[in-house]
Image (tube, rainbow, N blue to C red; front, side, top):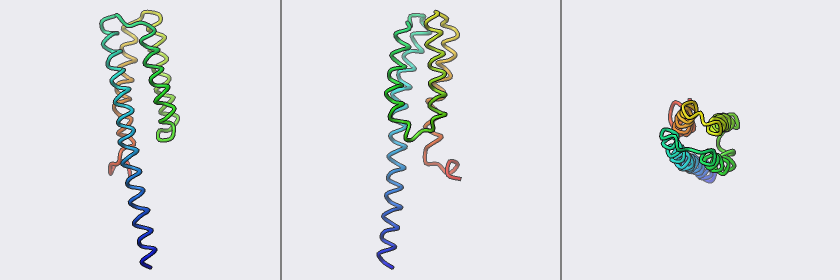
Length: 125
């Protein structure tokens, strides 16, 4: 009986540790992505952004995406891919005002997405 209780407590502690690590990891990855989006947003506002700036953010996202696919559902990841592709296409055409809106949506997604997977009471129940 004592052995079963010890195994149960160990499993619960392991799960809690895993959840805390996953939340920390998601926050860290999206902080870096958000910083890149902020930089791109500033360049678009100044109308100095080029297609290469958009591709640099896309490359950063591709690197993050390959690691996040374990923790984040594919629909959420493809949603970011979609908005980022649209923003890069608009940068290619020099449509800064429309690209600015797309980046604004991406900034909001990158701010809210980690919260959707954090350890909160509303996410559990």
